[in-house]
Length: 192
Image (cartoon, rainbow, N blue to C red):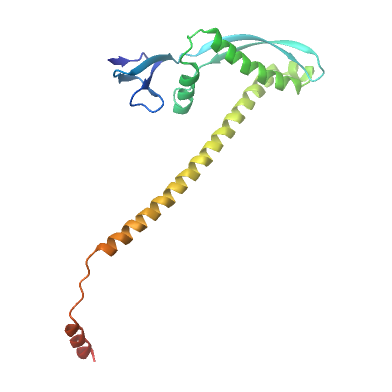
């Protein structure tokens, strides 16, 4: 059956003939393959986070986060599809997952700050929460890039070795013709 996704949706296809999953806007889905639709429209989530400052003073932080996948980055879209495609769009599971991540990051950051620092700049506080997450993502991406570069280098060296062996075998397999011994002797006499 032929499927086409709407503007804010993607098709996630799994099953026979597909290694892990395939994300596309339109596809022909064969028997023994499954097709799910994921909506990538950003969703607003409102949370009230109970945290404690460095002075052990509790406070309540009201937050609103807009969450959704980055559709331009294929890796992130695949992660989104793997983690959240089997949940309903406004599912409590998704909200609980996001809330757990945000509460954890906020509490870790809040315990390292005094109440004055927290209330002095709520924008700075929010920026620090996001910057920590961005730094972690950048570090992970750097590790991935290094691993890919090593892999490509190893593949390239193996390809060069293979080509060298192929060329050597080709040269060894080529027929060689040598002039008769009499012609060689005649040329030597002429050169003298």
